[in-house]
Image (tube, rainbow, N blue to C red; front, side, top):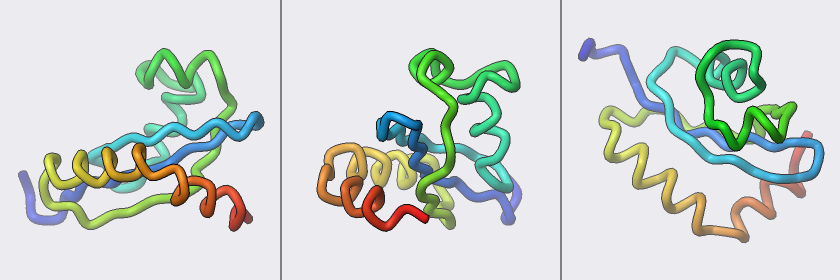
Length: 90
């Protein structure tokens, strides 16, 4: 893997206030958002049927997939964190 590639952890939110947390190896999570919204092939079946989604939160700088997935798991378990994100949504 080239030195400039990094893993992102992202949280999406839909109009109902549902959150989806995922990881991606991209320059930005924009491609994944398009997939989750059904604009491109791919994306989780769960998100394709519950969109549209928008990016609520992004963390970047993970050099390894495992580290990004560990952070993803932390976010998924932390209801307070997601509640704070929703409160401070722009």
